[in-house]
Image (cartoon, rainbow, N blue to C red; front, top):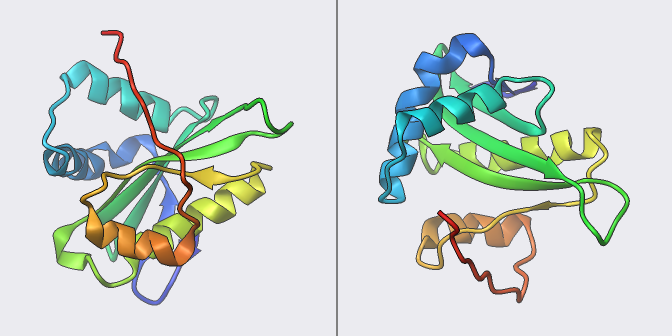
Length: 152
């Protein structure tokens, strides 16, 4: 658990669903997408299943969840330990610019280190300039380009 004078970051638990879901929906809206409820339900089950390598953390300001981060730990061919993919990061509009995104990423760094991962990585949209300004201060931008072919 990460704690500052203003907020707390802690693992998501099953009783946090009603706090997480509106933020999840706002995150999907930000990326101009929708998902079937079964996918969101499955995501939640994975985030709160301690046997899964998908993990979620909520950022709390007093009694209100104001942000979250989701990670996926996975093996890779270039190292003997897992990588940690930061898949989703969202902070409520009303607390953006107050260090919450940075704190969530730093929490992931500590979590990845504690679970013996060899690196943390993520992607973002090229035009997400606000987020990229933060990312440029806490990580190294690679020269890799992502290609994708959806199968379903």
